[in-house]
Image 1 (spheres, rainbow, N blue to C red):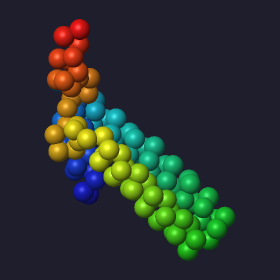
Image 2 (image 1 turned 60 degrees about the vertical axis):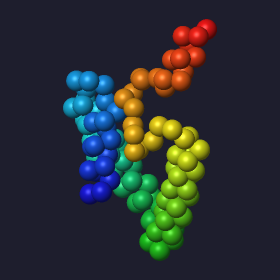
Image 3 (image 1 turned 180 degrees about the vertical axis):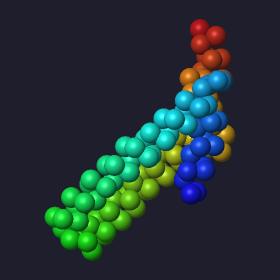
Length: 102
């Protein structure tokens, strides 16, 4: 529930004007369609090959590594983040200023 509510707010904030519903459609397609389908297929294959306990441990280890990568990336990326998202396609003001000076 926390992911879904945060995802919908973030998708709406970064969408260009008039494209909010389209961004929410893409979010729903990726999460509900692709994500859940692939999760069921991959999880079933892991469970049948390694057993339930090992599949759970492997999935947990992968999730922990993925979260570490995402947190590292977000702290390395710096300015634009989840707290103050910019709409897609919008450039940094510094980049625009540099282009104007040239």
